[in-house]
Structures are given as structure tokens and as C-alpha cells.
Image (cartoon, rainbow, N blue to C red; front, side, top):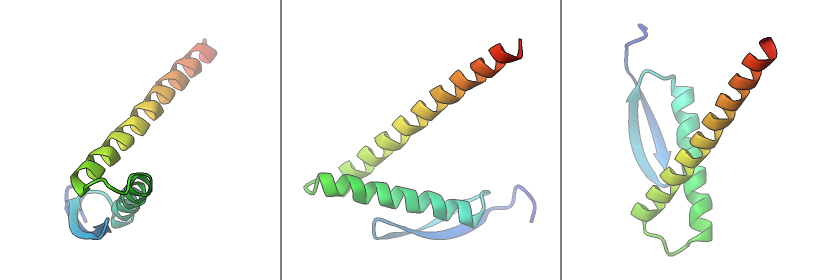
Length: 86
């Protein structure tokens, strides 16, 4: 399989079935889908009256928040590594 070849991976997120198409492995896509599904269930358990659209937005906000925090930490560690190399 070439690196530009698309892989179609069936997943279920919050009871809905999707076919995710991309260049990542099926294992990676399934891991991402599982994490999204778990986060949606976690948020829903604390907010049982949320409709699915709001639940999806809150899940996305949580995911981007986590990404930004990790990215900031990564940048900090890169700077620290460069400082230690000097």
C-alpha cells in the first residue's frame, strides 16, 4: 500500500456508525474513535440533558483544550532541552 492510499475504517462513536477515510492505520483510527466515544460518554454522564450537538461541541472543546496543553508542554520541554544542550 502506498503512503497516499486511503484506508476506510468503520467505527462507532456514541452509537453512530461512521466510515473514516484517511491515510492513518485502522488501529489508529479505531483508537481515536474509542477515545472520542469515551469522552462523549464521560461528558454526558455529568450533563445528562445535553443534546447530541452540544455534547459533540463540548467533546471537541475538551479535545482541543487537551491538545493545546500538550503542545504548550512540548514546546516548554523543547526549549528546556535546547537550554541544556548549550
